[in-house]
Image 1: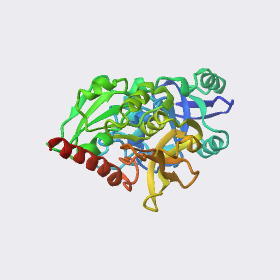
Image 2: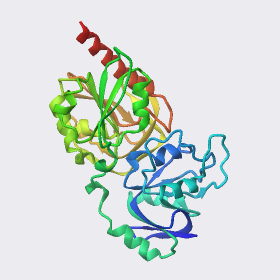
Image 3: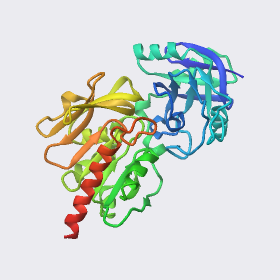
Image 4: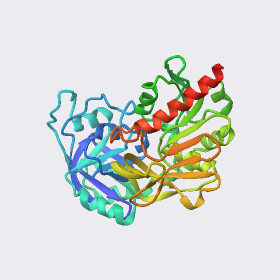
Length: 366
């Protein structure tokens, strides 16, 4: 079955279809990771985007479902050079193509992903569309062009939980409210592994409702889209700053930065992969990190009198971590919970959260 991928600049390529027949639209973004396609495709941060893998062979160990980061595939579509149709792994339950069919999603393979990656790096991310069951390039380009810009969409509302839920921890480890802007499952797992009682709440939850859970801290999760769309999250941080400790990951880092008076901007093509180098200014070392974001914090807009920039990307100098000098507020741009990716920072970040909660719990008990 033939398929076509069209870009808003008029480019189109014809290849073989994956998944179900039909069309999908989204911003075309690329990731450089070799493995972890199961985690990436189910990462809510990819909502509204068509995900392209630069590594030429994807799907060789199949889909197990064991490492999903949400209930289902979140990326709008998939672009690969070659999709393995005979995976080999003892935990595999279906092939990549079978997974797309099961999820009702479409993709394309057999095209020049290197050319598309170079084009994206040179010209920036572009709106795109895939039509499976057609070779009509003009129609694919039209579908790409007619969709709205991703920055104007309420993607958070599509991925946040509908109702609060709790993952109980052990007594004395503390309570944390996780504001779900599209949280990956492994964030909850990393907190739960430390015995922390986790209360996950929708992104629109107000300060008064958060405080009903008597949290020792709050954590703002990752998520898709423009951080300036997260108006409630920004308000919550402003209202709770100085009252309880606040942590953030990825989109949560950007929301916290906005609440502290900094600005954010859309990057040319973002950071998406499992090998982004981050310089830790405090420790004087470089961490290898997993990242997935298209927006960043403007370093020049950060109030250096109040906020320290603790980490920087060694490739392009973008802000990777901040910490307030007087208040208990700390956030990172990358994914310390990884999945997929290295675990360099998992212990550093989540142990810091656990230690903060433990300290608060001891003070309260006294």
